[in-house]
Structures are given as C-alpha cells and as structure tokens.
Image (tube, rainbow, N blue to C red; front, side, top):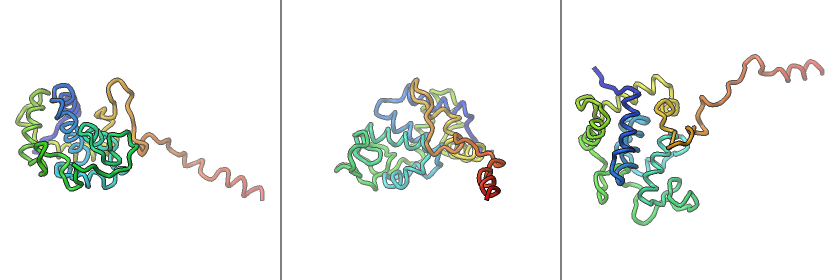
Length: 200
C-alpha cells in the first residue's frame, strides 16, 4: 500500500515550516517540500543549473520557492537574483551552477540524501501532527504522483494547497495557469467570418 498525505496534511507540513522552522532553514526546507510535491523525487538532486534550465515552464510555486532560496542566500543568479531582477548576472563568485540547491550544510556541495530528507520531513511532520511512520521522501513522491493525476497539472495542485498565497496577500496565479483563462465558446468560432463570406 502506498502512503500518501492528505491535502490538509500537505498544508500543515508547509505551514509548520513557515511557523516553526529555523530562520536559516525556512526558505530551503519550504522549497524542498514544495519542489518534491510539485516535481517529484528528482527535485532532491537538482543543481542550480537544473533549476535555471527553463524557469518559464516551472510550476509557479516552484519558481517562487527557488527564488526565496536565492534571496535568503543573497545569490545573484538570474532570474532568481536578490537585486529585484535588475542585475543580469547568471551567478556570483561564490556559487557554481553545478552546486546542489538542497545541500546538508552551508559549505557542502552534495545533495541531501534520502535519509536526510526523511529526517527533516519527520521532524516537521511531528510538529504538524502527522504520524511519524507515515511521512518520508517516498510519501511525498507518492503524493506528488497522486495529486498530479487528480488535478491534471502542478499549478492547479498548488492552488489547492494555497501555495500561491503569501501572508495576507491574495493568491497569485502563474501567467501560464491554464485554468484561469476563459474558455472559448466553440459555437462562436467563425461567426464573423461566415457573415463576411456571405456578404461577398
């Protein structure tokens, strides 16, 4: 039987990181959970080059989460740089594109192991009231697969988790969010063209 988290458990996990995570870990741990839920297991081993590969096609919640890491670490990495997107530098002298986004220590370069991710998840899960035996990296990956099948795309999943709501601000949707676009009425297609052709 595959273990998965309910939507409420996902929300609680994300909320507890914001409320009770250490200041240094908040941005990184928030992004780690968001990226695992939105993008699956591969997110654990992302390098900055992976994160930069195609930011336009990323789920908007993932883009925002990765940007927060760049801001918290004062990284000058376009398009996540901390200078309000004004500088056009790809990286500063202290960061390499091959460096892992989610690393164990400030001076490390290797990505978090599955055990390290699970340890973090269990710590936050306990604070969020999620049974310790039900939360680990595999549970988040299973949840990612289940909810993407259920919702159809990551932006809709993120909206259900209220991930695009910051503080008291209204929810923000990606400009590429398909569900927010008005549907065209198929019966109206070509009406003007038919009237034009009939008058000729």
